[in-house]
Length: 402
Image 1 (tube, one colour):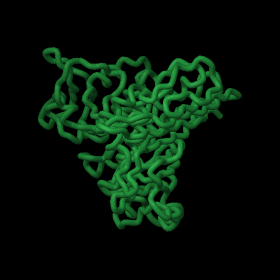
Image 2 (cartoon, helix red, strand yellow):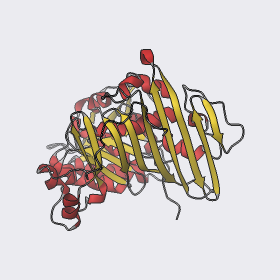
Image 3 (tube, one colour):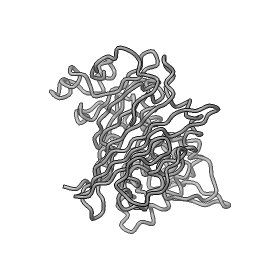
């Protein structure tokens, strides 16, 4: 059966920020759980880096992060490069189910520079196979004719959005969205913006909401409104409002003592209400009609604990249409028997080194047998990643090809 949406099934990292090495398998809904500073955001950032590089410019993506030297791990042996390798699957319009892998290795250079040391992509759709490999700016292997020339400063896959063999992989990887929602950015009125895709901080929520309201069947909007009304008591609805050339979100809400609902613009509502709207837009608003992978950092922040059950339901609902990755350290969000061991990845950090993986056997058994909940285990320190064979030493300075 052909997958209904693009999903990343496995993430392998080497020397990426606090992650010396990681090999993590993912499902349609994954909770990355661990204390602040454990490395949850670093894991999601690796996915965002690939998305930014494939969908735009790797140079700009690294510049945003302070350069390649700030991304590669600081560790004994002084590794000079990092690598990200993703396995994925999804639909490929008329060509059959898509499966594939994509990997890139980046070497840091002097004065904040970088070069792409290795890049490779392998895809299969139905009976069709395609692949390329690049080493130090040279295309070394390709099943396809007339590919663009390789460039040590730009990802080759970024040039292949219209190439038949690689278009679906390009769209899926470029379509990964990661959100760290900021109520202050959502609150500030701004000139009308593009509402095609929600910005990382949610600053264009009004534009996305307006675009969503113009979709013919309105199913996503009704779903969003339903959850938001359950999270925010008395809420009637939301819409974009333009005031003196600037757009903002307007909320309509019942008010005690008034026969008619009152209208409030974003600067007048709470952080929790704005974040709830941003999270639901991230979950339910498609981009160009596609439901790509979404990652949301700490969606429970600023919400009342009583809203955790509604938020958890919304996450599961969205995961029926797209892959949803969530970072959290909220016991309330995880405190339910529906949160299974298979959907939790525990994150721990010791001496600046992050470990991430499936739950260890005691925690997995407790959840599988219904003896405990992930929320209670989080409260008691019982969410621990499964042990992996210990390395005798730090990985070598130069890592192998992705």
